[in-house]
Each structure stands twice: as C-alpha cells, then as structure tokens.
Length: 462
Ligand code: URP
Ligand code: ZN
Ligand code: ZN
Image (cartoon, rainbow, N blue to C red; front, side, top):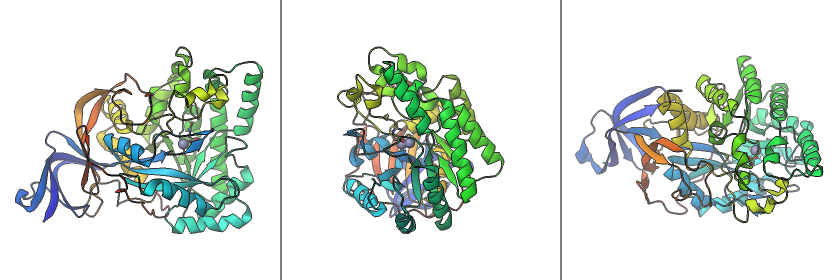
C-alpha cells in the first residue's frame, strides 16, 4: 500500500526527464513507473502537464542569526516555511562558534533554535571563529555528529576573520576526517583600510559598502583559499561568489583538477551596483557581503553555472527588515546589518533566468539547486534525486506559470524584497517533504518541529 502517488508528471533528474508516476510510502520514494496502480494508494496528486523535481536544497542560510547588534528576521519556522513555498525542502544553516566557546556549544545552540521550529529538514555547517590547538579535536567530533563542513572567514576582522595559519590548520584537520571547508573569501584586512578611509572622507551612504569591497579583494582571497587548500590537501567550497575575477580563480583551479567548488546566489545574477543608487537610504536593502557588482559580471556568472565552473546556487538568506534593522546604519554604512532575503525565490529565479531564458537545460537546473548540493554536502542519495529509497521530497513545478515577486505576497518575515517587481516563470504548485504535503497552492500544511536534523556523511567527492 502506498501513501500517495504523484501521477502524470515529468520527473526530472540531472540525467533525465521522463514521464513517470512516483509512489511514496513511509516518507520514501517506494515506486517509480509509467502507470502505477491508482487503487493501491491512499492519495493521488495529479502532476499532469507539470515537472516533478527533487526538493530544492539551499546550503547557505542564516536563520535566527545574531549579527551587527540585531538578529536575522526569519527564524527556523518562518524561514523553512518561506523556503517550502519556493520549492526548497532542505536547508543547511550555520552554527556559530563564538570566541572562547567550544564547537559543541555552537552546535547545541543552533539545534535549540531549530528543533522545535523547523517545518522541513535542516543540517548545519559550523562557523569557526577561534581555533586554538586544543579545539582541533572538536572538529573530528562534529564530523562524527553529522556536521562535516566548516565555514571560515577571510573577512570581518575582529569578528569572524581568521589568519592564514589558523585556516591552514583547519583545512589540514578537515582533510584528515572527511571534512569540507566553506570559505568566505574576501581580503578583510585590505577592505578595512579602504572602509576607514571612506568613513574619514565622510562617505557614509549604503553604496560605499559596495565601493569599499573591490572585486580584487574577493579574487585575491579566493586564490589564497585555493592555495591553502591545495597545500593542506583539502577540498574547498567558495561561498557566495559574486564576480568574474573570483570565478576565474575557481575555473583555473578546477582545470588543474583540484577539488574546488563554488556557489553563487540569485542576487549576483539579477542585481547590480546600480540598485544601490536607489533614492534615499534604499540602497541599504542591498547591503550584503560580498557586495553587488557591475552588471557585466552577471552574464559571466550565468555562463559559469552553465559550464560547471560554478556548481551550486544557494541564497545566503540573511534577512533584516528595512525599518529599524537596516536603519541602524542610516548615518554609517558599516552599521547596516549585512544580508538580504532570498530563501523563497531561488528555484523560480534560477529556472526562469536559466531554463526559460535558454541558458541551460532543466537537468542542469536540478543539478544546481538540488543534486550537486546534496552530493557535495553528504546528503546524497537520501536527498537531491528522485530514486527508490530516497526521501520523498518532491516539487510539482509548473514551468509555464508566471509570478511577479513582491514583499506584498512573499512569505519571508521581512518588509521588503530584493527582487521586487521581477517577473519569474516557473512556480512550485505542490511541495512534499518526506511524503508530507507542505505546500499546496497558497496553503501551507506544515507544522513547527516536524523537520528533522540531517546527520550528513563526510565529503567523498561530488
Ligand atoms: O552579508 C552577508 N552575506 N551576511 C551573512 C554572513 C555571510 O558572510 O555569509
Ligand atoms: Zn559569508
Ligand atoms: Zn552567508
């Protein structure tokens, strides 16, 4: 007996797009066939004329995250809910180790934030900010607990930034235990000098956040991260890559066969420095790090996604309301909390700009938003594919439906949209998480606490 059958859709994976019925039992995909017997199921979900995708996986989110004197506006309930409306059924968020704390404390703290609230499945990377010799063993312990990836920062001096020796030690340790290093690659020291000069010259408007963080600072740090990882014999995953200069460094390393991966985010594909010229303080809506770049970088990034120089699209969802939160930096751009909201629209923006615009195939789309994230981060084949035995995280996706993105209709707990007014083609109709209907049209059926923590496997190539 099946719990449900998704009938009549086109099931898409990186290698195929075939008409198929998909049978679900006890939260797993139990049958895939041309016409499964309907009387064998408690419920039928009709996917006729639509695609059936593996649930989206967003490997870069910041829910309920303290930052710059405030806290990101979505928690694990509102964030997973908004994600589900957009077809994303798995998140990897970041547990932050603050200076002097153990890595275990970071993990426990973020488990507490998530476990009673998440409506869909989640996992964690651990942000390391402090790594004396005595703490290195804790990396092994966390890997065993199902947290095999660590984010390190080359930016934000005095807050998150690590020196090269510490980065190198963390990489060497990660390489021994099957860990993955996720790198925020910007030269924080040089940027800080430029920022202090701008402030001294009275340049305090939001746009100076972008103008004080040159693409060369990102490219230099990307190149250094790759060199350190090569010396340490570890894989490295460059997060939120924003510009062609850094992309070139990743492409060169991959051409040499190094285990180097990179993600970009929809904001770098759709928005540019020009958005920061909006009147008044509106540019603050686009203050995140790395910053927006000149428009010509966008096509280079789309091409990078097509050519597999970039492997993943995540969101770096880190929402702060314009009122009261972004406004903290009204007189000084360095006091604007860094981050933007994007968890809800990743799938539609990438389908729309990628597949509907003819830049790449629907198979490549699935690879970028679900399959490769699962492979790199130890979730495959439980997540990221449509196969017997995989979790029944499925999205019935209407490739022809159009929508105009707006804060008036979105589900994120934030008072603006970075993508306000952008028309997308390709919208999720029904979203299942482990066989449970989370979203059906504009209805949400999920419940706080029903998401599970995902213990991830170690890195074994992508
Ligand atoms: O501006 C950003 N990206 N905020 C979130 C923290 C980070 O660096 O990913
Ligand atoms: Zn970052
Ligand atoms: Zn981030």
